[in-house]
Image: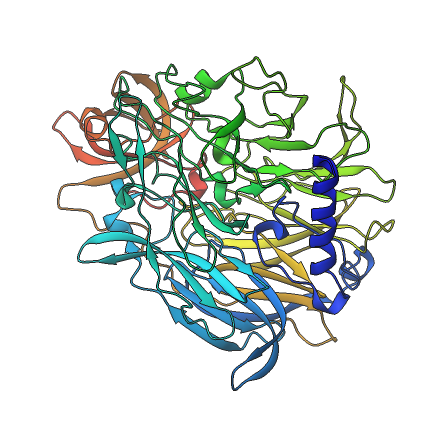
Length: 627
């Protein structure tokens, strides 16, 4: 059996196991499978006609204890001790709480808390790209064979942030083995040892279960503490949680001109992907903004990466030719994930797609991202423009037998037909109406269909909040032509500094949307009123400020060294001295024309001397009030 046959067999096996009957679809990992297709091909109830017919509505809103950044997971027909048989939805919150909920009623069957989360005040630079707490950010993964849910919690005790990986029994939410504190070390290019630093590392990418192991990627907090933070892929043996002997440290440089490292793996929460052969795939972010630090062996910044299952070897990489400018402007390629396509009849190789902040989606040879073995970096088979992507693509096979890639950069879902060839291997066949959004570009989609039946596919998406004063998120559905079927409020997202990277989960006639302190359950109603959207008291917009310290939002209009010219929401200009923020590694790289948050003190001349520089969204409607 060759590589492509193995991949096909593995995908079919996964789909058969997950969709044995319409009543028993499981969703045990981010975006439904290890290829990250986001496709449920066995949905018979939620057809385009049914969804647009007037009876689709919110059935339940379940109150949770904190914001949810992780995707919900679903396991049907479980026996919960003392409570009988249930289809169970698992939801993990930023308060480090894991819930087991009845998939129909939303009743809380079980819950467990894995420790005090890390408060925003303890994050590097008091990073604002999150809610007030950071606990479980990466989507857990479930092994349905052993009945184990693997999850990484971020806890705070004795003023020390710690990551711990747990293996929980899905029937009881009890640890099956002793939890393991996340530790690692890597060797830099000068022979020195670099140790994993939990205080400057963010676990945002969804966990992956493959090759009998659990894998996780690590990133940074708002690019702060860039002198300490570097990207990692770590792994543990499933069942025992024994750490793998090897790991991947994405930036192995001992020095950098600006003492600025990173090369994070975050992908807006998208999961590391895995092929049937066991290779891992992910995308990395920016490194030193001087634009000269990329190296295909010691610093694989701004790259799509193929990694061996044992984490010992980078097998191939694709790096866009404009990687230097991506670093200089902080336009991470790694803001989006990498989707592995199932085998396509139009291609002799396996394919992948990936896109990032600058809005170019690349079609890649997944068997060898280099495409030519003599090249240190890769070559794309094709590329298309999709809009800025803090997102990840989806996939389905249409009734004509051709694959479809659903991109979701900017404000639109776009359907691309995979036709192969060398001139235009991806052809745009549909574009949706624009989603309402006030945050960064892009959003997450999933697809449901009844096999490849004509007219059965539905593309699902969740928008970002439109403004700081209107923080609702909406659930959208589109048919294959891009025609909007529904748009309805699905929850709220008051912490607008952090993107609502929400993945809708569609299975067994229901749609699940997790947001701020809430899980919405949608389906076909019986004529009664829809469940009311819960209203929660808004959490504090930010940390408490010391006396004399101000916090302003604006748009960068000029940069000269560490001096910035910032236009406030009123149109007034203010000079910002960022020297201290840069010197103390409390500065995310600013970029002309983009939003910025500045904390600091004013001098008599009206210059704001910044202690912290953070990215803000591009648009004043989403900004909290200045203080």
